[in-house]
Each structure stands twice: as C-alpha cells, then as structure tokens.
Length: 550
Image (cartoon, rainbow, N blue to C red; front, side):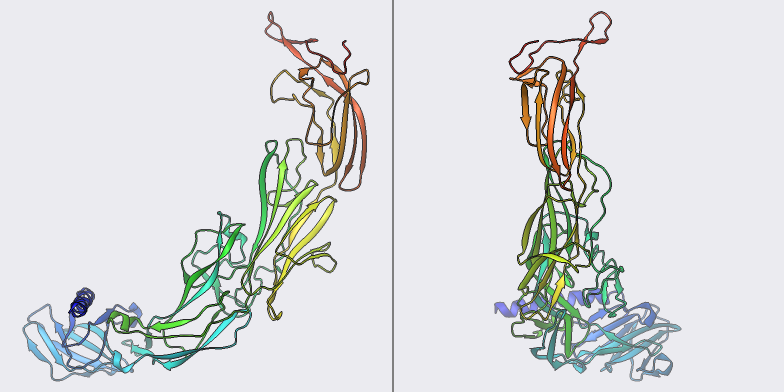
C-alpha cells in the first residue's frame, strides 16, 4: 500500500512539472499513460515547443484558441519541413478547444489561429528505445580509455520548420572514479599547463580535441601549445630583503594534471597537496557503441545509464557496469621548494620565485605521482636540454644543498610498469650567484635601537666564514662563523667605549674565491647637548673589552 501511495505521489509531481512546462503553450495532451516532457528548442528551428510522449496509445492532442471567433486549422509535416505540410482532417471543436484524436508521433504540427501559427514537434519515445546490455573494456593507452557498449539507442530526431534535422539530447551518463589533484593552499592557476579553469575551451591544433582555453599543454596528445617543451626556470634579477631570521618558502611547480568532466572540485590549486579519488562522469547526447574518453588515473569500474526521459518518467534506467579498469596512464604534480633563513645583511639578487640565489641554498624537489607510476627519477643536468646528466636519483623526493656557483637544471622523469607511458616534468632552474663580501667601517651601538647598531658584513654565496674582532691592543672581543651574525658593540654584556676596533675575516665563496680581509671598525656614539638641543660627538661611558681599561 505504501509503495502504491509513493507511486501515485511521484506521478502527481511529474504531472505538476508537465503542467508547468505546458503552461506557456496552447497545445496540450490527454489520455497519455505518462507525463509529457516539453522543452523550448533553439529559436533557429522555428519551433515553439517540442513534446516527448512515452507512447501514443490513447492520446488526444488539443489546441486552445485565444479568440472564439478565430478559425483554427491544423497541418502536419515530416522531414521535408513545413513547406510540405498537409492539412489534418478529423479535428473536433468544442468552444475554444480543438482536438485531434490519435495524433501521429514523430511529426511536426502547424496550428493556425486565423493567420497566427503555432509550431510544435511531437516525439513518440517508444519509437526510439534505449537498450544498454553490457560494457566491455578496450585496451587502454597513455591518454584514453575505450569502452564498447552492447546495446542500441536510435537518435531521437526532429525537424525544424525548414526541414533541418536535429537530435534531442538523451543525456546518457557514464560514471566512474578518477584521481584529482587537490591543493593544500591557494596558488596562481596560471602556473599549471591547464591554465585557469574558467569554462572557456579551444581546439588543439595538433589533435583536434577540445581543451581549456588557457591550456599550455594538450591533455589528449601531450603537445605544448605555447611554443615551449615544458621547460622552466629564470634568470637572476631584482632585489629584495626580508626581516632577519624570517623563515619563508619560495616555490615553483609543475602541474601536469589533465582533469576534466563533471566532478566535485576543490577550490584553487597549490604547490603542495595530494591526489584524491573523486567521482567523475561524462555525459553523452546519444547512444555510442564505442566510447573513448580521457583515461582515469586509478582503478575503477564504468557505469553507463540513461536516459533523462526514463528518469523523468520514474522508469528503471537502462544501465550496465564494466569490469575493473586498470589504468596505464600516468601523471605527476612536481614542485621545488626552497627553504631559507632570510637575513637582512644577505645580498639578494634572484627575483621572486627564482630558485637558488645565495649559497648555501637548500631546495627540496618533490613529485606527487598517480597510481600507475612505477619508474621515478629526478635528474640534474648542467644544460637545459639534459644532454649532460650528472645526477640521477630514483625517488619521489630529493633534498639538495647547493654550495657551488653556477646554474643547474632539474626535472622529474616517470613511467608506468612496462614503460609504455612516460613523461617528464617542466624544468626547474637553480642559479647560484657569484660570491661577494663587503665590510662596513663604522656603526653606532647604543644610540638608536635598530638603526646601524650592529656591525655586520654584507654577503652573498659565502660558504665558509670566520670573523674575529679585536681592540686596539689585540685582545679578542668576539668571534663568529656565521656571516649573518654580527657584533652589537658589547663585551661582557656592556657597551664598549667609542673608538677604533679591528676585524679579521677568512672566508670562501661558492665560486671558490677565498677572502682574507682586515680593517678598522669605528664606533661612534652621540650624546644629546642639553643647551643646543642638538648633538655632539662624545666619549660616552662603557667598558672596553679584553681586560684593559683606557
């Protein structure tokens, strides 16, 4: 009883939807066993409405006029168009309503109210049955999956008033699982080969497939569309500095993901993240005996079901599910992250997002691979074409500390188990600049906090460093081995007296250059003159280090 009640409610709701759809049309139907589907086609067809009926058994078609004095005349036409229409006989009239009993399906009707026409097409769905018996998997390749469909489903055709053939969309849905790159944090979508996903598309000039309008690489044939081969990198340039000891990350990345179709999407992409299994689908307007689609990146079954008219009538969908598909297609999201402690006295020459700069530079190269990737290798070369590969590391993640001046090129090479599918990431360029070491000769500790109150060298690409500072009698006040460190003008926790001090430095650069520097350090301290409001140089208080008083 409960099932019968639910069925009645479902039919009632469907009829309400039909009434809403037909409310704008003077044409209606009675006697049909199922609700009538209606939609407004493109204006170029000349049709006002397309009606889809489950079948034509016991159906009557009605037209309600707006003028009781008007003459209503019915015509019908086939694939030749309205110019070859013939008048329909057997019309009955009752007030404003004219009725055609047992109308013929898959015909166009032109109903004139005096000289004002209404153009409709009536589809008999029973003449276009959809049958889906089974799905068989074809042999997959590096970019596509092939499915053979055992079944049938004629195109649901209709004709415009000028006799142009059109096909009604069945909306047959193929459902499956796929891997999608989901990011940890937002980044610029232009960095990926697919570009920003704004819904716009274009045609790949190499294979003719549809791809995102901003794509730099075709996800079907793998061709780069911007004249490059996927290479990356950059030149040193620009200047910049950050607060001392402020840790931050610089990254460049390669996102070679070719995600597509309808799916639940995470917002944005990022340098770090993970491949996540998601529900995906493709929708087809008509029955296809062979389906070719971009290959999923994980094991999955395919389920084909349809169509939208059976779903509208609450009838069982035609459906079939394949065996498990095992992909050979591969993909990888590759990144390079440089972690550095940024110091206010380090000379910055690389621009934003450029890897390297001042040695030592520690960079982590990381690849996130899809399921079918088995062979993995990070390669380092001294030339951008990788003719001279000096390092091969067979792992997902590599951390390298760069100590030598020069430019190196890094890329990730990956393949599936039988090496039938392989690919490479974009190239990451690491440039370590030549060394530089400069020493100031004056500072003013204890005068204005944060302004020239620490003696520090300015440096770039210094890999070895040792500095000693002495007073005028040769007594050591301080020594340190980190070029980012300095002297705050104190000894034993107290400011030393103004005067001349001396430094000695031994260092070595990433380019092999050796430094042996020495010179004066002048400490100047100013006292405020209470009478003039200005300042004058004075001796000041304090202690001089080294156990010797002045």
